[in-house]
Amino acid sequence: MFKKRLKKIPSDLVSYIQIETEAIRDANDKMMISSYCLGKLELVNWYLELLEVGSKKYIVPQSKAYLEMVRGQLMACHKEIMAVKITKPGERPLLDIKYPKGYEG
Image (cartoon, rainbow, N blue to C red; front, side, top):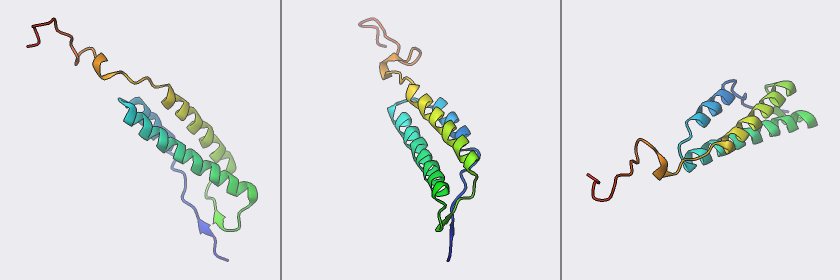
């Protein structure tokens, strides 16, 4: 019987998400990185489930311990993503200068 070898979870995945989290500027950025993180978390959980049941159809390329470590890191990343506060467009101190009436330029 042919077993399908699954893709490895990249070792730089958590670093990438952390860097992108620092670059969040608006709600779209926050939604995109949150969705990406949750998608990877779902994949890691699926791999762990395959290892639990001893799947005959798939080969999981990483150990259970590694996948559990990545799952913990991804959950921490998602918590950080959700904690990022989005500044309102009118509250950027150097870009949105409030001029007195009649002095707009």
